[in-house]
Length: 67
Image (cartoon, rainbow, N blue to C red; front, side, top):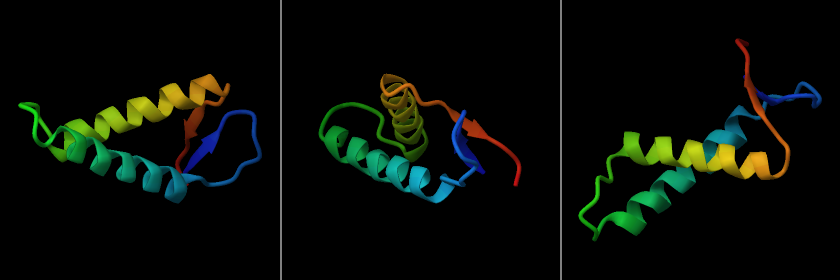
């Protein structure tokens, strides 16, 4: 379960994963013609990092808990 620290305990897993998967596809598409690695794993890791940076700008922090 993915939640935000100090927020109501709502499970944001589906929406966060949708955003990250969409960004992963965009990263792959943007870099396909460049001589760069565009494997799913590396692009997905970049998307997760970008999400965390974006959330930091808004003072939000993801918290993962076992359901």
